[in-house]
Image (tube, one colour):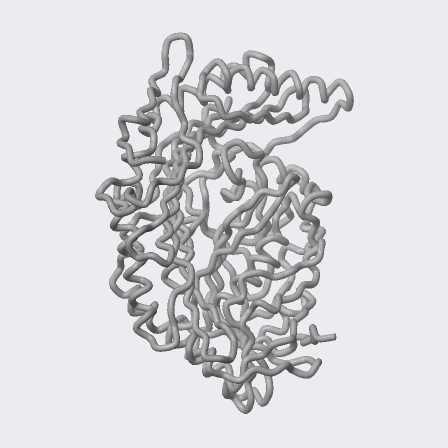
Length: 550
């Protein structure tokens, strides 16, 4: 794509009397290298954003059409999404910039006791209204084949607007500034002998999403997210070590969050750590059971793959059995209020900024809440949606006065994009750190022989999430007499979920806390979701270690 100006991609987005929005969307396009060296911004190449008023008009036309066609309930998510990827590559003068603009919508209706869903990409009022009527016809057809009643939990009809808190919109920042920032990161890593920077890329998303329903809900949210893909590497002849920078975790917010001066100091510190680990000799461990110290990233990843996914009500109730799986945390009415982990563990769910999943309202029009998930090892609640909560006894779990928010009214209904069905996803999960002083080194002290698990960003789980293993790509370090002495290769850690969390022995202090985000899949076909967690380091006393060598 040659260097151009916004005028070349100008789109008309006013709503005409005939109910048509005329607009041109920009497919995925790569800019020329000259663009990355210019003072132009992504906004100079992308179509002019559709007015929120026009998006709301499209949404209300769809729900009105569905109601007129006989729907007892209907909602729609309408969104325009702009995407930007800036990759500094290995050439400090020529960055690679990719841009994309999409319009998406998804209509869900309840008619004759059955649900139906229709989605599309054409931004016209006539098209979305026709889709809504088609969804009603489909639902009515389902009812003729298998009559049933679909319950839907009541919720207040909310209205309003919300924007991710930010100071600088990344889509208005000159492209040359994006590239210069990535090069500055690389320069900070390069100041450490033996270390450097591998990936140098940042992905930005800005989406305006409107939700409307026949109950009268009408919300508009502009969501801005960054996903830095910046990796530190070191190789001292003992094999490559790769680490990520804590301050560069995926998050919501503006360009300013990536320009804090302390980030470059943190990059240098992480690079020094990578060089230190890369200098260690390597060997494999004997098969056995060992105490393992988890850094904050690894504990957060473990949380997301176990309690994060395992407490989703649609999964627990079997709605995902033929897709992403079920959950060992069942039946929910019997487990709420019972111990599921060591009393040291307290977990809170929240969807506030700057977490990557931050929103004001979820994709069913429910206001997002902060709520206890696990308190001192005791399960407080599950995550639900307005569709899933009626399946529980009495319309909600029998919480016996537990403080957890009612499942379905916490703000955990999520569509990965506006054209996808709504599923249940966990909020950002936060593990409270230990009360005393316990650094990562402190957790290692007193261990005669054990391991440290670092930078784990993926856990392989079984279909019920009852057991799993940590992949060999994670950084494993061997502890002898309280000190890290080697890197470990040729081994994998395996665990039973319930036993793992009950084997939690010590939590690290606030200084060990790390925020992490991983991509998890759900649905059929699978959809990717970025999920976040904040966790301290921790000592777990018994983890099985197996050999991967033949």
